[in-house]
Image (cartoon, rainbow, N blue to C red):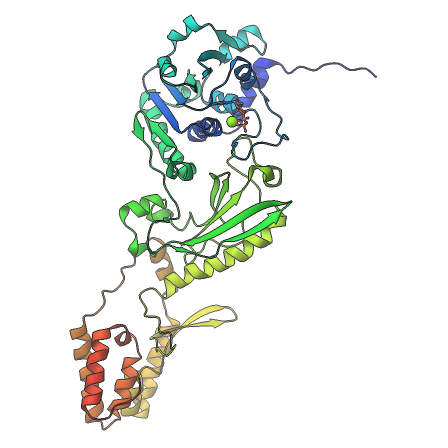
Amino acid sequence: MFNKESIPFAPALIESMRSLGYSFESAIADLIDNSISANADKIEIFMNPSDDPYVIIFDNGCGMDEYEIEEAMRYGSKNPLDKRSKNDLGRFGLGLKSAALSQCRKLVVASKRMGKISAYSWDLDYVIDTGSWVVIGYEKEELNQFPQINMLDNVESGTYVLLQKFDRIEESTNNLEKTMIKHMDSTIDHLSLVFHRFLDEGIDIYVNNQKIDGRDPFLKNHKKTQLKRTQTFSIDGEKISIKPYILPHINYLTQKDLQKVGGKDQLRNEQGFYVYRNKRLIIWGTWFRLERKDELSKLARIMVDIPNSLDYMWSIDIKKSSANLPDKIKQNLYSCAYNAVSSSETVHSYRGRKVNTADNISYIWERIKTRYGYEYKINRDIPSLKMLEKTLTNEQVNLLNSFLDNLESNFPSSSIYLDVSKGEVKECDNKKTKELLVEVKQQIDYAKSMNLDYVSIINAFIKTEPYCNDDKLIEELKVMRNGEGLAGNV
Ligand SMILES: Nc1ncnc2c1ncn2[C@@H]1O[C@H](COP(=O)(O)OP(=O)(O)OP(=O)(O)O)[C@@H](O)[C@H]1O
Ligand SMILES: [Mg+2]
């Protein structure tokens, strides 16, 4: 037996490493992870979308000294099994190189620590020419060739990352400039979501001098957003916390709110778990197959916080854009998802309905749970129907009942479902007190003319939809009832 060192062939492996599946925006996000891990509180992205485009990510973090930057440029600079500090967003010792070079052929990194700047680059064409794993180092006087490098003069410490030669994007388009601008737009959107908690906590990210606002997918500042009970549990001694939020009904959302939650059409698709690793959003809008993405659960979003110490359990990938849910925690998430989904259903089904704590309201449509799901039935005890039953002939009552049966069995649930999912159902405007009063009076007059017990009919109206929702009308009805000298108990 003997040992033989088997060194990877640099031009081939470095090219393969470009195909880990980064999108433009996930690559930029990976570079920003590094700035946040370096404790930067100001991160600036500059993009020059010309024929020879470049992108710069510049931060005021702790920077790197000569030795650290040399290490940082090495593929696999850190062991993924090492314990990382609590705020470190890194794991594999690869992101800087693999994310940047997934998009372009040249990566320059210049960093400043204790007033001293060191700089290196990976240039894929140089790797091909030399056939080996060599980075190019730069002397101080050579740095001026890089655009906007003098930004480093204005910080005590910080890092400048330059991406050049966007070969892949160039190959994919006839209009490089336009495509770069498009990529940058979706990057702004992506960053505003995945880093929203950092942005809300005072870390500033600028794109071409424009500050990015955080996009909170839970609308925590909306007064109608409900936060359900926070739950925590421990796995291998590490804490996972779960916060279920129920978004307000769509009718309470402004255009701006809708934009934050991903748009009206996406509301249903974006329900589910939002998994954060050290406050950085990794995966969102999924129930991990624990629940279906139903129309009725579309307002439920659950924030799950996991520490980086549990990375091994979630099988975090290099891009930090996917992770598998381990069975160990499935059960805890499931019960939480179940509760959140039923709350979301409640927001939908009972919106606008006055909740009577005495539980004595008669609803027109009754939602009845059966073994197979829910059925909607017309409440046959509402006063208008009762009155008709008493005054119609048997034949007429039979006709009325078969009409109501037909109405129930032809309830257009599928088309309502479709229309609601597209947000195209207009809620009926509530009738004004005056209109309701005319309607009720007609019925009371009819009851009187038929010699029916109109006082108990008034009492029934007071408890029935839609009359029970109108306080002014109820007052009028009480006066009407008491005025007849036959006060009842409501
Ligand atoms: N902007 C930066 N400021 C300071 N140090 C940095 C910066 N970017 C990278 N580094 C250093 O370079 C190292 C290598 O970065 P790289 O992104 O390749 O790997 P990582 O962040 O450790 O892990 P991952 O592959 O998961 O991103 C980092 O661990 C960090 O020490
Ligand atoms: Mg990294």
